[in-house]
Image 1: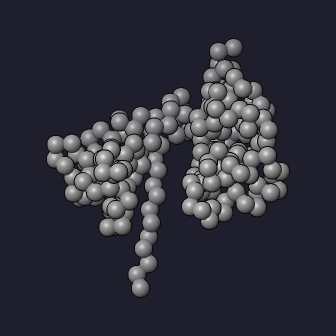
Image 2: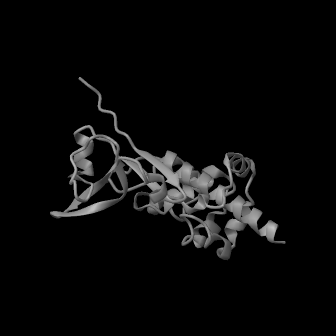
Image 3: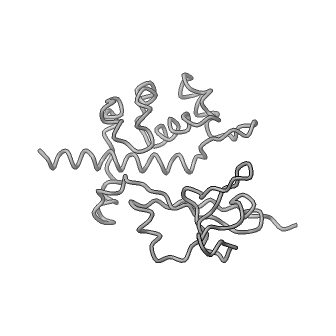
Length: 196
């Protein structure tokens, strides 16, 4: 029996269109109730059947995966716009963020992915990348039921796949987003300090 490997590759860019410029890639599609839509982020670098006039794949992304094609998601992540170099990014990553800023609604509203969840951040007051990742997981349908429960309960259940198939954040994705948010926090603080 051959084991099937499932790929889930997400790449973050300040401007996804610039990143895709000049690359030979077909845009993924989503088929919903006999209606075809362009996938927001997915592209194929394989020789997948495509419409030559639109450069859209002609196979729904879920069916394409079953056939062995793999989609790469090119994501817009404006969080990186102020990063000047790889060294600058490494310095932002190495710096412990000022976690107390997650209690300030005005600051949270500037942040990638959590801007609408200042109340939840205030409720849990995360003080680590892992705790912030767990808060990110709570905003997904598959884990909303954990909201209001203590950290110990959340830690036991937050990374378990929901039995009803509802959407949830896998730990790797939540940690990645959490790290991106801490980079943005440090970048915003740095920019404010430069203005003083």
